[in-house]
Image 1 (cartoon, helix red, strand yellow):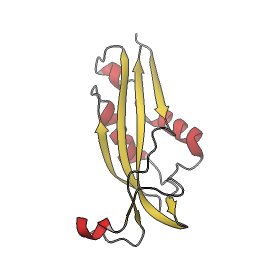
Image 2 (cartoon, one colour):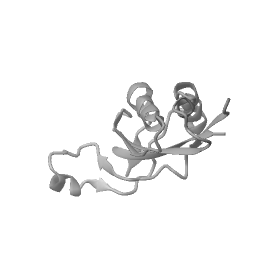
Image 3 (tube, helix red, strand yellow):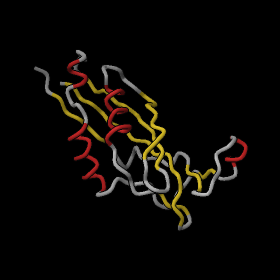
Length: 141
């Protein structure tokens, strides 16, 4: 039977993609241009920090997914991005890179059905809407 490890990359994969003020109206692209930030003072965070996030993922991801889909030995990296609003709610989950073998579907399931509220990002002392990027790697030996 194949061994399975699950790797999580946290700080180097978390990127400030887009943040919008909590008072922004998202009616058109032109309206939102003036409210888009590319840097925040404090990124959105999972409550309890990286250790708690790692534990949450370990408990909730179906770690044998690529094995069940007959993935050959190797690393299978899923890149996911998601919005964290000013209340910490996770939404607009997007699988930006999916290596197949059910990995992207498993990550999407966790982010859309199981992920609790995060601590919102902060810009200039105000909570802002923030797009977070996360990389999760399945390793099949």
